Image (cartoon, rainbow, N blue to C red; front, side, top):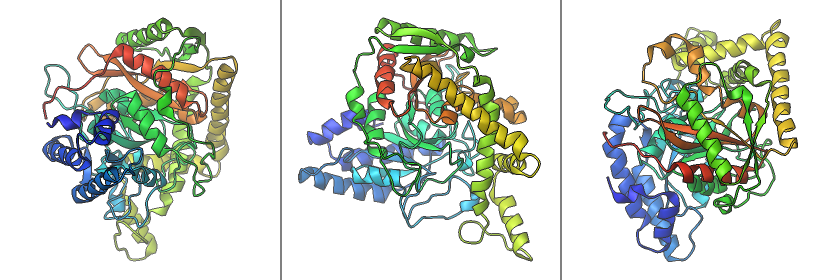
Length: 493
């Protein structure tokens, strides 16, 4: 593996600016790494080698002309949920076979405008529905981490499993991802990477394949907190094409790195101490509390009383919105089409073959809770619960709490094909128990690596912030990162 691929975004940026390395050299190093590792890890579903080299050459020309952008020459991976003009965009679903949009998502356009280089499209759970990256039409992604002394393959988390695995395995400098109920933070925790879900509306959703429109939000997965701040600055923007996008100015997130947390009030929610929580997760949480206290923060116990209703409410709201959003995939205008004796038969055959089992399950749940006679009992009630969850956070922040510290996941990564998870979908859904509240309330949340499990796998902590106060999250996450150190997998692939 080239030493160039070990550089963080910040380190690569300095070397590019100093002309110690060219973007073309950096890009070629990543392409070589992808070609060597991807047959084993399956992190990329499309590698855009020639496009990447062309973008890198143009970046080098801009450096020579003194016109470099904020991410000039930095090679990135793009989750397959983001529309990329003329390039495979299928949400890793069979139903979008051969779809290559004629437009670019706002987030990726922002990155290209700042000079970033696209290495390719990253694997993910189909339509972002999953917590393990096992629902992809292109097969599961393999986590670059393994249990010490074992050769069994582990999941990287989901739905942004390809993003997290490629960053951890150094197959890109950073990656775009999306988070509907934990799909940035959970895979980041499983792979020893940093992932931030910004406040709802901070990044435009235009050109991102929709799962649940009131919950979806784009964000970066990177190797450290500084890189996450650098990437989010470029990804975020106001966008007239997305009416849920905020018109607030995007701050310089990187400036928050190194800011003191002295005097900050950090909340510890008692409801997150769930029954059966492994001792190593509880111990990690206590370490995080100690690190922030040692840095001068005040630790306070808080209550978020409606937390226990978040997961069931989420699994009503999200499938309901998915049922509506996925109705557009019918085989008529683009993607997969199976001919039938009439249009209804064509719809049925196309959708039956085009969607995977998990997507079908969620469409059926969503259609059921929206149907006549059940709408009030399920969907309307879930939306009321969502309001109560949001109010819990508002009350805590009104009491002066600056950020909330919780575990990111209830366990370390588990095996691909885990029998218990396969037999019981609810067991899989419980992986999101610490993350869904953040989406339901529209808040920012960041997962940061904080230690290793007894079996040598990465574990993460989560920090939850006030709306549009990502800067405080970067400052507090940096304290945790500095105390915990950085974690990289031993190369076996």
